[in-house]
Length: 117
Length: 117
Image 1: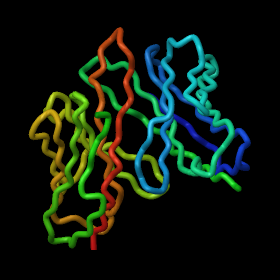
Image 2 (image 1 turned 30 degrees about the vertical axis):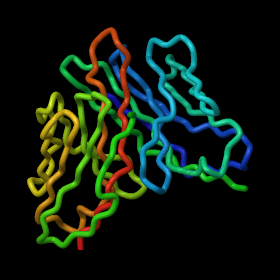
Image 3 (image 1 turned 180 degrees about the vertical axis):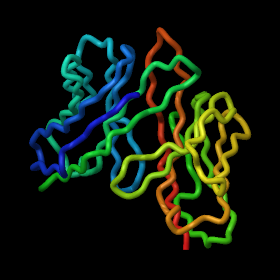
């Protein structure tokens, strides 16, 4: 079974600074995808970035980048130049390639990020 | 159209009421999901539909009854709920995975905040 671990307590960052949110994962399946989602207080789960297990380069999407270290089974999210609107809960998630028709997205417990002006 | 639309956004219901949550997507996704989320916790999977057929029921009480009338619509019928069922209910959709292709994530709706009184 796959598992996602997010152990950081609530994180604080000063506006315009960079912040790293940690995520480690565990799976025996060689084919998997790693995802980060942002959930503001409004409740919507917003997709941020994706990393495939066979991708050679770290994923980047605007101010978001994923520090993927496959041997260490970590997939940390880096947010550069933090903005006040980045204050939210952040979830790391994983999905493996199924043998059947579908597979579940497994979530970590999440990290709350607060950006200070 | 890259949205998952959920209605209503807020719902207050009594323990003897019958209500329904609705979810709609027009992205051609053939997998749809219902999640329940308590505050500051990760989403918990309730049901998975693949090709309009129920494929996963995560031991959800029978007072929650899902329905998938067609490939674009997903309903969650509620009856005789308890106060502890108060939560954010998220709908999501995704492509069905197949080997050799990308591992797709989920697209989430903005959720229905349910309060049972």
